Length: 355
Picture 1 (cartoon, rainbow, N blue to C red):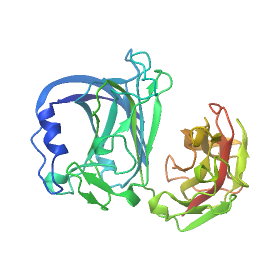
Picture 2 (cartoon, rainbow, N blue to C red):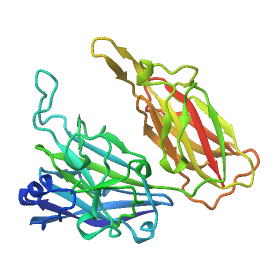
Picture 3 (cartoon, one colour):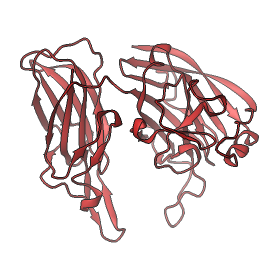
Picture 4 (cartoon, rainbow, N blue to C red):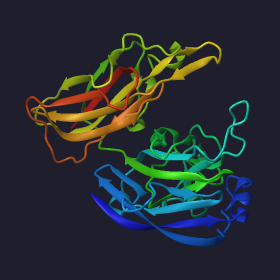
């Protein structure tokens, strides 16, 4: 379901940013100074466990240009408020034609996107939260790579139940996240272009699993954590994936489903890499994309995950579009390497949650 809305561009002064950077863990958040607002149309797409925000189709641009110290705020529909955030996918970039990197390949004036959630369940001075995983700047900011409009960078913020969240004053909490708003703020020095924010929610706890491990030492963690406890391939293995199921472009792995079950989620531990760069001392990333589909009589009845970017080592989660369908005799889960892939996709293991 897609609906057209308006979004407000929030322009924040450094009188807002600077005190927060110096704040202690229990400090109150200073009053925001709004310099100006500007209206933009955006579209919202809703699924059972996913809501996404992106620029409207009828616009001449496909992204929102956000200058340093600016942010864009989206209202999350009320029916998602009781759900727990599991992941977020950020699609963003810097203009590939706007700058050049220095002689060492460094960006001295980076564009940095911070994703902030507003959750009213927290204390008043802790209601704005961010993901505390690996980042390039304040508030969990992600560096926006120099990309073309047709090929923005995709960032996965994952395992919220495992990593928890932090307040803008840097106070951590393991409480479930139930936001009513989500914002993207440019905390860098150059403009960023925001293509999409996709919020994914935790599905119901499965009562049983279909699990198979291909690469030894691959282990799934607790379902609610949405992460791998151990990878049996990837960076630690020099970009190799021992005994993994290999998928070239268009190739598929099919798994038979039992009948009369509801599908909760499909977790795939996977990776792609072109090998180990001895000079740089790190793996060279590949370019593989994953699809997960529910198939009945040769026809796709639900797309659980489409064209998801694969890292050197990842747990990617496919979610049902709705929970109304029951599996039938002969139904399959199909894991495939999408048409966008340019190298081999390695499946280290999968876990299908059923109810």
